[in-house]
Image (cartoon, rainbow, N blue to C red; front, top):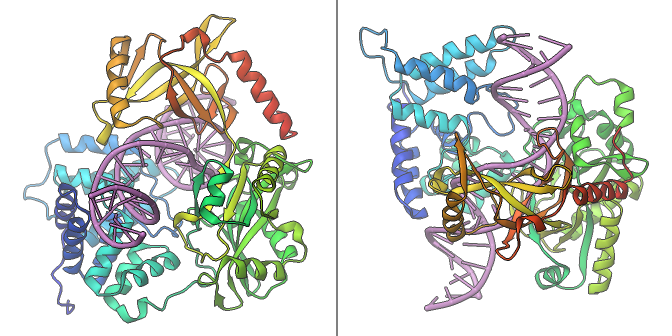
Length: 537
DNA sequence: TTCCGACAGTGGGGTCGCAAT
DNA sequence: ATTGCGACCCCACTATCGGAA
């Protein structure tokens, strides 16, 4: 090769990852990663950057590896056997590992499990234990070296000399850290010029959480620009040149699953070329169905028309980020909002909006959103630009939630920084009929490190038995639990599961027989689906 | 010097299609 | 016909680092 680069081994990537993981400072991690990537050819660097971010393929790439814990467990057995090689196998290059993973992703059909297994075993047998460990971390998207996409972009900026702002913007529109690394090394001058283009998905902008309307005013000032927050599928629709593609929040092309969304976009927008952002909600009788029901339409393909009609998607658009050849991500929200209104046939396709000058107006709008079966409201800073993939205070979400008391009936040992703590708790409600506590799901959210420490001690004192990762305890510790929705569950004996459960506080003052009853939970569930005007079956 | 924004890490609910059983 | 697996839809929350104030 005439590139002037020495072929980089996968082992070197592992060494760099380890080194970055050992230090705690972000700057030091960035230095280590940039020095490593700087030694690589553009192609190697693009693969390595993706690997370090916990991806095998670009995020917009729809290829699937089809390798999970089960297959890996099987393949790992090969390491326990004596290798059949007479001479030591050649350690693979980064590019070789990538090509092999591409082959694995390409396998499908009957006997695919066996074929994937053989390829995986072949790869494992050429790697040291430590290299296998890091390969697995990459495959499962959990590299855990305290550096992911964010710090990799800083490393790319550092090694290419391209300002960080340009690198970040390139990432936002290219949607792949590997593509950014490649371009930064191959043509750094061009990196600052990339922008949104038709049919290449862009990471959707995200919102921070707010907890009351006062916070919204505090952050965004008056008046507030509010929208309904719908509980559905985030969709980014690219249309033009006689074509429409729909992308999900994680950039999968979901066009084939949502023909009615395509139809509504085509009928609802009069425009040459556009990329619009919105939420698709499944609606029956004018009211949104529970998210759980909507899920039945996700990734469901080749579906008969009568099924689609029984659970139709409605579209609520709230942004436009590309229009007739021009990127709008640098335009303020006020402008994008106006342009969106100009290209819709009717306001019906837009997210419901209001401008609230007072606390009272904001509250009323929020109440109306929740009353009509939606999640809550969004507040958007009128002057803010569209920041793809960024979660910040420019957009704030205010969601409704409810609270019940549960008793902890079991707990699971944590992983990583939580190893040594019981950090995942099985929550029980009281069933008066059987006199038992029945599980309504698990949560690991809400406690501080100190509380985990304390909770672990208390739970171990209440331990009844231990099975694998699960420690069953005497039901004694009561916790107040916030959740966003009660779902029907086949997994839990109570028949219900809490969506987005998190512990608000520990109730040392309450006895387990004072926790919420199953009857009460059932009543709450029935009330919530009545609000949505939806009934099972 | 203190404050706060962005990032990383830990893990929850559900449903589908597909291959294996 | 049923089951197990892998992918992916929705995520919330706390700790930490380092630049902003």
